[in-house]
Length: 92
Figure 1 (cartoon, rainbow, N blue to C red):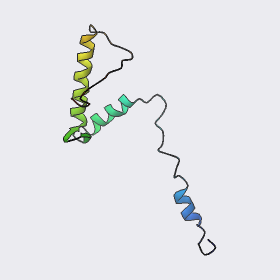
Figure 2: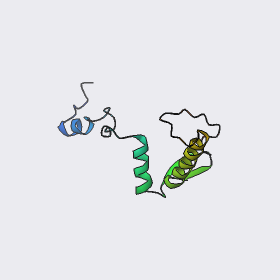
Figure 3: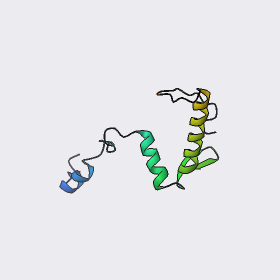
Figure 4: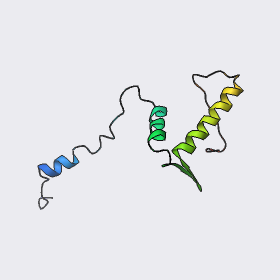
């Protein structure tokens, strides 16, 4: 160990942020709002790959909206505050 060079200020600065994780989004930001930002900003960008299937943000958003409409219809047209969903096919 004595033969190893001690890290200088530059190297120490480069590694200072390691292990702190990604910056956290502002308080009140939801997964849904972050997803919708991506749909608006990059609708054709690849959002999901599952086995041989690939979905853009816009296509995935359309699938989610269709599922939400089916659930709302099944619940009598109302809107549920919280709802658990068990899905056999994770994408379709």
